[in-house]
Amino acid sequence: MELDPQSPDIEMAWAMRAMQHAEVYYKLISSVDPQFLKLTKVDDQIYSEFRENFKKLRIDVLDPEELKSEAAKEKWRPFCLKFDGIVEDFNYGTLLRLNCSQGYTEENTIFAPRIQFFAIEIARNREGYNKAVYTSVQDKEEEKGATNGGDKGANSGGEEEKGANREGEKEKTNKGGEKEKEAYKEINKSGETAM
Image: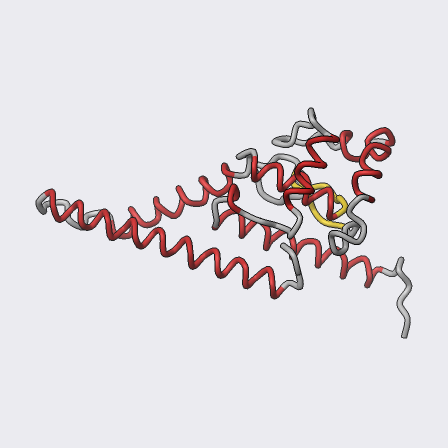
């Protein structure tokens, strides 16, 4: 049975895969400091080509016209085609956040080719823009931890407090490592190869 590429079933499958990819990516940048993420085997090449071709493109808050207008498409097309055969599914549709300090919502999302997603997200990670998401999630988790275990060691001596603090730091570091492992497992489950 051959499916019509314009059928609602195919469109729904693409949309679901794009949403799954977005959820996994957001979970990843929420769990691990994005500055250290490697999304593909060729991140360095993607980043250098991107910044060479789009020096002044503002990536913290994207203007859809900079991606979708006819003039923008003419500029993006040669960049994207450079990665045909280098980045798997380079032109596959993905969801891209317009404002990198916010999550994936209908108002904050645009559909973009995968290589465009990689170029912008690698730049956001390396230039520190995605750190806001990571920091926000980490702060919320620390607040939860403080609320759930707040009074421990309040009446004890200073040495015990320092020890408890060091334990908390070890625990936080370990949680970060566990989160990273979980995020990478999720990516592998979703069928992503390089990310």
